[in-house]
Amino acid sequence: MTATDPERSRLDDAARAGWLYFIAGNTQDAIARKLNVSRPTAQRLVSLALSERLITFRLDHPIAACMELEARLTERYGLGHCQIVPSDPGSENAVVGIAEAAADFLEQRLRATEPIVVALGTGRTLRAAVEQIPRLACPQHRLVSLVGHISMQGSASFFDVLARLSDLVQAPHFPMPLPVVMPTRGERDQLMRLEPVRRICELAEAADVSLVGIGRMDENAPLFIDGFISASELEEMHRLGAVGEVTGWAFDAQGQIIAGGTNDRLTSVPREVPATRLVVGCAMGPGKVLAIHAALRGRIINGLITNETTAKTLLDLG
Image (cartoon, rainbow, N blue to C red; front, side):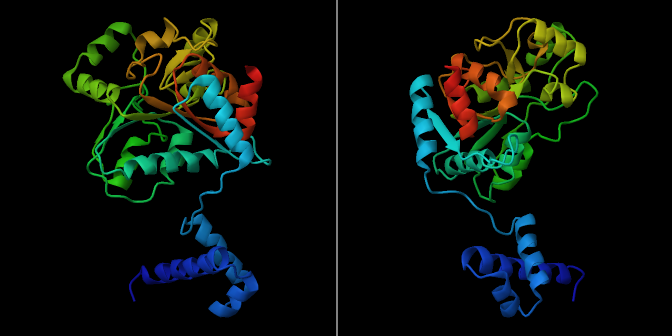
């Protein structure tokens, strides 16, 4: 027996327990009898099946209330894609639900035989979504980053998604190999003129579909928390009216990209506003409502994946 055999056997038992419980509908007592283990062991095996992602779930039943919200938001903002998932009453901020919906959105497009270019932002929600993607063979598609993931100190963001998705689906990927924000506009302009960077921007601008997160611009701004901008830079963007950002591009409450501040030194692919190709924003929660609302108003995004609580609040804002 090799060193990995005990672990494999444990996962095999967990997979069997997970199948018996979630698919076949057995009780934990019945599973204990069928696997010849104690009930506590059966319970632990079922839990292991979930924690190790041996079994996953996607909600296929359309919930009428969510469908109504989708229709209203689509009509109000002229969306090319809208998906509203049920809210978790026990958590206002957990990305469970929208991460699975974003994964399904990506998976459907990646399973297409016709080659496409998929452009991606970064962040916690998109990282959670990518972790839901099964292994696929999609060498016909290309994946390109809309934003760098390196700070001025040289550290990389844990929430970069491009390389992880490329590994999962075996598609070539084109990362943006730059710090998110440069110290001066001149340095930014110099880097953006480099031939490899120009090619990445051209590829991203021609993407068939983009999936992006929507960040807040308060004290909990991901750009600040993750070390891409300083406290003084965040304060400056506040003074300029920033309420949110998409791939680092900060915008005001009307959805207008702000002139000045960190936007002058940002290395992200320039945003096309209003968006003409499909750009789907994936975000939820009370702390992001103003940012999502502004991104919709300004047509920075023309697609949305969120939950029903956030959708209702967006409609109330008008």
